[in-house]
Image (cartoon, rainbow over all chains, first blue to last red; front, side, top):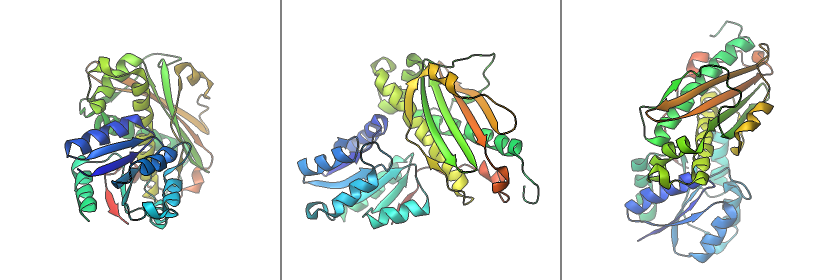
Length: 122
Length: 193
């Protein structure tokens, strides 16, 4: 059972995503901001994929990804940015900090799960 | 609209329509309820709800504030869908978070509508506060500051929305297609970078 980290300051979004991922057979770890996300990665070295919001208090998604780039143990974990942001500039910045794919909120469960299957299998 | 000089009223009128459409669309998808629809608010009501979520959407030429007003009972009913619980099992904190995320989704859609016409706007984090704080927002002056109020509801649940639209410089958008602004985006696009 692959483990997935969800980092988002919205409890509503975390709950929805956890429900959809768990129903598809994934184990889900939750974090409310970038700080908690990095703590979760250290506590769960078997995380296979990360969902991350951009706009969060305390530490935003870009900073969390930048910090991950600097740590060898976190390299190679696919990151899906799940956010209301969608500008080309944001996506370029996302790519620079190691983001694998960009999902614009609100997500569609079938499309999201198809992307997860592709990235976890890779 | 190309070739026609657009004034603040024209822009504000189009943005009002956009905010109403965006809020209806996002609440329907967030709650999985297609029965929710925009309704007019009757009468002069100084404070629309016990709680309020606020989000800012900003460009140097136009500043928008979107607010969702709600009471705990009705917000719990709307939040029950996404939380997959009975309304009486949803906590007030979860209902408040639901309203914050609703504001976030609406702001994202508004931002994207402008971005499709190369107008880049910034959005804030949503902020939850008391409903009474609504009284601090300025009213309409008819020249630069415009306001709107509506509710979205169906069956036994609804929430109210309000908007402040401050037009600093309507002439900054000479090529803005107001009809295209209302062409709402598809949801859930995925792009591999």
